[in-house]
Amino acid sequence: MPPDLVGQGLAWPLIDRPMSDVVCRRAGRAITVGQLLAEAATLAARLPAAAEAHAINLCADRYRMLVGFVAALLRGHVTLLNADASPARLGLLAATHAGCYVLADGTAPNGLPMVAIQLDPEPPVPGPLPPVPAIPLDRIVAVGFTSGSTAEPTAHPKPWGALVAAASAAAERFALRAADGPRATILATVPPQHMYGFETTIMLPLQAAVTIYAGASFFPSDVLDSLAALPPRRLLVTTPLHLRALLAEGRRPAPLAAVISATAPLAAGIAAAVERDWHAPMLEIYGATEAGSMASRRTIQEADWLPYRGVECRAEGVYVPGLGEVRLGDLLKAGPGGRFRLLGRRSDMVKLAGRRASLADLNRRLLEVEGVRDGVFVAPDDIERNPAARLAAYVVAPGRSVQEILAGLRAKLEPLFLPRPVWLVPSLPRDRLGKLSQRALSDLRLTTARNG
View 1 (cartoon, rainbow, N blue to C red):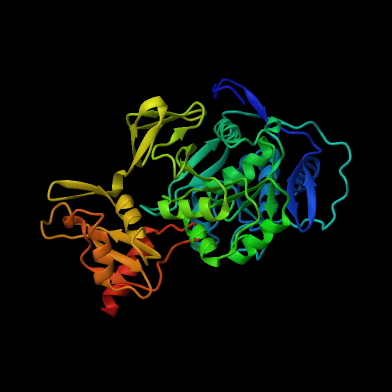
View 2: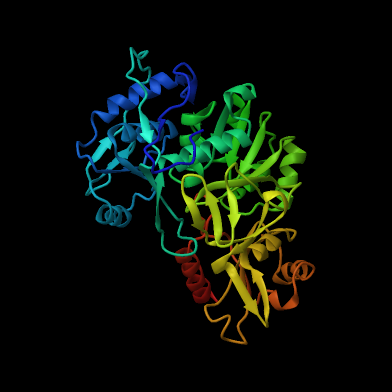
């Protein structure tokens, strides 16, 4: 673990584990750290020669994403963590970041230089490798982007020291260090371009004793089949949206050491079902693009979050090793023993008749109503200026009526926070992580209004 002295000329190895360790399982074979480094060095030689350049890594294959990230590190380039391959998004990135090029394992997007990542099915055993480079802790190596769930995506540069500190703290928290016993294999349903997926499946295998799985891991049947083919100790890294779908599949997965969730609050009922039906501890990670992963909890046992080593709750946010004090979009309340409670997002708080509530908490209570598969509360723009304004809710609840949903909410909410109207919809326009962008919600409002 590097000391928290970013900016003072210190450095930390790109890969902090033996060359013989298995870093990835892909297409039926085990890939060692040495093979990863060899393939990344070969790719680095093909990257643009510019000293200051930005790699947009669009690889869907998790191992290819890892190879591309390491290659960019070897070349001295910054990786932009972006999964949106639309021309508009790529054009915006190119306009705001110098020397953009695309790393991809699929169709080449138009308009930007591209380097294709094509790996040999059976790469040769690497020969002598150069020394693993040490990277300055204050060097910016990646840029994360907010999801757009509350506003347009914004960029957050990530220094190497902050990423390594978070990976080291997570390895300690979840017993993923070399001295913690059998190696863990991580199967993740989240894309590696998202900060949560990047930290758990790109940074962790570089700094902790874990193996990542690169294969089918999106549809429930694929996840369950892939888990069955992996050796123990298995870790499932996922989201509340995927957990709902996996539980609905009705199949018990292969024995899991733990299930880890993030990106959205996890309903207590889902957490209890995982522990009861899968016999695995259900853990949550708290994080934000601005600061990375910061804390965890075991959902059915703890309401408050236990910070990672070095993380401290502050008046306007958190102190994070490698970053310093970071102001968050969330409101936190410090508690005993360094723990903290999440009150909701700053933009998430609504006020009606002098009473305040968090939309995230209202959504959590909505999801606990019997028969509700998905749902979201929406506040009108003038809710704090217009005395007649009311909250609305969009609900996915096949076979349930509006009256039944309201009856379920009355037992959980103050009357003034009951939604009027409640719109029953077949689905919500969530992205792969289960998030609802402001643009998607606006489109849903317009569609619902047109259809009456």
